[in-house]
Amino acid sequence: MSKTKSIVILTVLAVLIAFFGAASFVKFEVPNSSKDYVSIFGTIGKGIDLEGGFYAVLTPKDGETASPEEIDAVIETLRSRLDDNGYTEATITRQDTGLRVEIPAIDDPDEVMNLIGDQGELQFRDSKGNVRLTGDHVTDATAGINPQTGDNAVFLEFTSEGEKLFASATKAIAAKEDGVENKLSIYLGDRLISSPTVESEIKRGGAIISPIEDAETAKTIASIIKSGTLEIAFQISESKAISATLGDNVLDGAMIAAAIGLAIIFVLMIVFYRGMGVAASIALMIYVILYVAVLAIFPGVQLTFPGIAGIILSIGMAVDANVVIFERIKDEYGNGKRVKSSIDAGFKRAVITVLDSNVTTVLAAIVLWIFCSGSIKGFAITLFLGVLVSFVTAIFVTRWLINVLRPFGGTEDEGAAKLFNLKRRDA
Image (tube, rainbow, N blue to C red; front, side, top):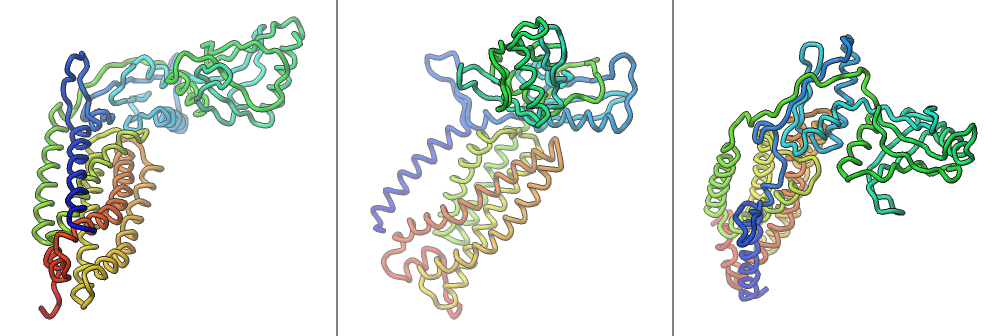
């Protein structure tokens, strides 16, 4: 690669980093528009400690009492519903004889109340009110689009017994046996979801609940059906919006601190590794931009202080990976190899060490993700995503950037060695 080509690549890269960096973190007023531009980072959901949210207290109806086992079953069901709908940072705790549910950064409190308060008993009834089959006969429920009508819908899959009952019900209703109308009404609790016309027997292929008013409602219904009914009938005895526990300016302060920390890391990397430090610094900037984009598009990500801790830890691992690689390159050059051979051998040998440490962290994050909930799960998600992105940037992006910078050391091996601060052991 020529020096001119390297200059062109670095110039284009600088422009792209500046553009996407601004898109990721800068918010501003859009000229001639009533709406402001929200940065990519600003679109990431935030937890109660950073943005506030909503809480509801659930108590058993009609003075019922609940055993610890029944309460645990309700918590598990509600946890599944909240996770399926992206509220991974929501918390569910026991409160007296009931439960307190705290949900961060919600847009529609009424919809959340439907989500956590609906008993979710699914029934298929004919026009005379006879229950033909129930949610116990459903194995899966997913939200989607009805391919025939284009409406929002929920797709149901039945057990083998459910398929037989559904086929029998549709056959009887289509033939209008016993004077029933050719309608099969679908109820969720006491709420009528859909009442489609049955023209013929449906032997297999599950069922489609359609039309549903919007995609969010379809997702909620699917989640409630899939999670099952609550063990106890609950009522919402108290609900209220709650403010951010850490204040409005905490996140801005954390971002400023992170920016200062990264700047210090850049300086130290350049001082110790010169050209390789420059490559690592550029790679880290690319890493941060990619990481923010991944956090913004990945479902279920909500920033809390534990989640921010996961971000900081993953950034630290990205820096550590570069240090391991650079030290290996210095060892290879110190043992007598040329610069290019040292770079190739350094990356080849260091990748095993970096991969080993990353795999260990990823496995730990997966365990926390699966078996924990709330803020711990948020920490696990941000750490998991950060480690994956950091591995890619450390191994591939940093290596490419070192090759881009190499022509600035001249054509001689000694010039490249000086650029990358490489020294022989006898020097």
